[in-house]
Length: 253
Length: 253
Image 1 (cartoon, helix red, strand yellow):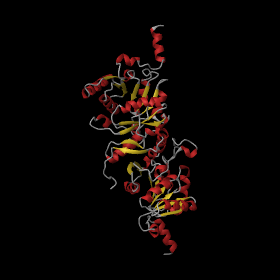
Image 2: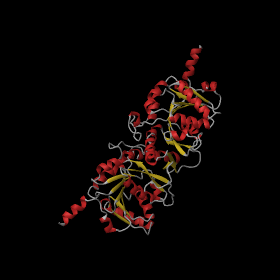
Image 3: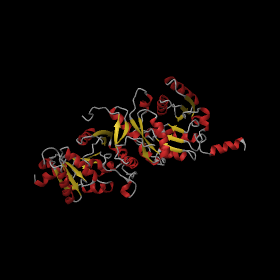
Image 4: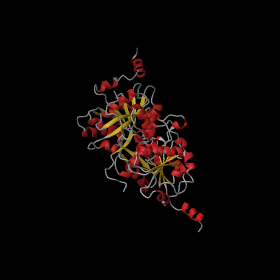
C-alpha cells in the first residue's frame, strides 16, 4: 500500500484522533473556529481557565496567533495554539463553530477539506437579522429550519452537528471575574453525542448542560438569543436562561 | 339623549370598569376565557388562592357553573363565578384567553361583541402543531408571526393584547401543593399595559413577571412551550423558565 493510499484510507475511516495525539496526548484539545471573535474567545478563555487545551482558529492565521498569545498571557499555564480555521479544525474530535451567521456558510464551505468523519461540530450560530442590517431582536428564517440544520446539511458525511452555547453571553464569558450561573441548551440527534458536548459545557464552572431535544429543536433554541437581547436592552443586564424543575442528578451518564 | 344613545356612547368610550363595579366593587375580577380548560382552571385556582375574584368562562355556561362550583369547593372563601365566555369577558378589565390554538380564532370571533375598548386581553395561546395532529414539540407558522399577533388583529379596536403565561405548566398550577418558582415572560407594546399584567402574574406566589419586549416577541416566547415539552419528555419533569442576571429590584414601577 502506498503512502497516498494509506492517507486516503485514513480520511475515509472514522476520526481516530491520531492527528490530535501527535500534537498533544491528553487532554483532547478544543478547536474553536472563529476563536478570535467575541463568543469564540470567551469560550476559549473559560476552557483555558478550566485546564483544557484550546486551538484558536481564524480566517487569518496571524490573527489567530496574536489571539493565542493574548490568551496565553491571560492564562499563563494553559495550552493554547493559534491556527488558520482549516488547520484548527484538525486538532480535536469536537470542533466548535463560533462565527456570525453571516459567515457560517462560507466557513463551512472552507472546512469541507478539514473536517473528518467521526468529528462533532458544535454549532453556536444564531441567525440574527443583524446579519443583514436588521435588528438583533429578530431572526432570519433559515430554509432548513435553523442555522444548526443548515450546518448539518453542509458538513462532510459522517460529521455530526450538535447545537449549543446560544444563550451564554460573550461579554460574561470574556470577563473572568463574572461568576457564571446558567444553563446551556443542547440539541442533537444522539444523546451520546450531546453527552460529549455536555462534558465540554460543564467543564466551565457555573454552566449546566440541558438536553433540549433533537437537532430540529435548535430552531427554538436559536431564538433564545434575540429574546435575551430584548431582555438585556430593557434591564441593562446580561441575561441568561435557566430551566426550572430539573432533577439534581446528572442525567448525562 | 335616549337610553340607546347612551349605550352607544358607552361602547365607544374607553372601558370604564362600570360594568365590573356594578357586579363587585373590589378587587377587580379576572375573567378567564377557557376557564374550564387545564391552563385556565390552573390559573383560576392560583388567583382564587391569592384572594382574587375569578370568573370562569366556557363555551357552555353550564360547564362554567360546574367548574366554578368545583373551584369554590376547593377554595371556599374565594369569589368565583361561572359564565359563558361572552358574559365572562364583560366582568373585568383584564381578560385572560386560555384556550387551545385550535379554538383561538373561533373564540375571538365570538368575543367581538363582548370585549370593549380599554380592556386588555392576555393571550396565552401557543400554536402547537398538536392543534392539527402534529407534535407538541413543534409549532405551526402563524401568518401574523405569533398567536398573540393574530389575537391583536382579531380583537375590537381599542382592545390591547398582551402575551403571557406560555411557560407555566397547567399541572403545576392545578396542584396547589406544588410550590411555583419560575418566570412568566410578558410581551406587549406598552410597558404600562405589561405592568398591569405583571401585577396579575405576581399575585401568584412563586411567579416573577419579566418584560420580554414588544408583542412581536411573542413569536419567540410561544416557542418556549414546545421547548419545555421537549425537555419534560426527556427528564420526566414539569420544566419552567428562569431568566438569570436580572436585578432584584421591582422594575415594573
